[in-house]
Image (cartoon, rainbow, N blue to C red; front, side):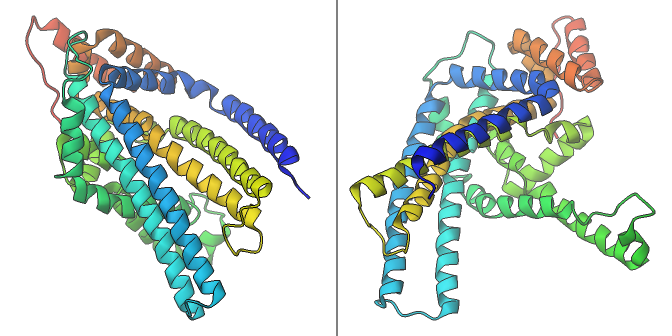
Length: 372
């Protein structure tokens, strides 16, 4: 059979091959992602408390995963041993509710970090370089707001945004085709109308329930629906809809998370095999330990990496809404970002460059780009 001695090298080689192939595919977009990442990490370094918050919530995610593992194993063993008698439909319901519980709690923890970090980046955006204090209470204030006034929006979005994103991905397979010779288009004109309605409905939901909504919640204190709507409107007005859809950084973080999850899964498998723990009545305890290790590793590192993705999202939103203030407070980072964006997305910086030039041309006058 497949043992850890062969599984680990095989998965390592596959991961390396996929990483190299993906690098060639996205090579042209690397300068764009790098500039956003460097700016986001600059804001995080200026507020090191955000890292502590991220580690704290990573610890909470680990504790929750351990507790949830014992709950699931206990429920499974009770059902299989006959201590808990349930019908087949009730078993499906119980396992489904457990899965939703874990998914929801995991995303709440991750999005609390995202909202807190977004608020922290927003404060740093308007502070001149060199005036930041590493521990000035900014992070704690934004964390407090995320856990109190914005907590309802975070919980609501944590449950809904993921499924809406998944539905939107599926909707691309049924969107109307522009090819008049398409077989589906030739079946009946009614099919086009149905496809259009479904696509419009999904796009309408996605305009409110999207990951940018959490950024707006952290930056400006909006509710989830208002934040998602304002973010969508902002990017549409700037003509950046395709730009902000670039998922290079999230994909790289996902790949790293999967590798870490695979390593923790192998560790769980070896621990189960060597120590012969048999902590569950499942037919193959080694496979169960492997899957549990993958889930725990993936969740824990995803919460930690949330500080990176949330800082980058906050940078993009602030860059779209307040490029002039960024140029005034952090001119070096502003010039690097605009140069990288021009290189990857020609023409996208024309309006921004004009606003920055106008603000510099008017002697000392303050110019504020209206927020959407």
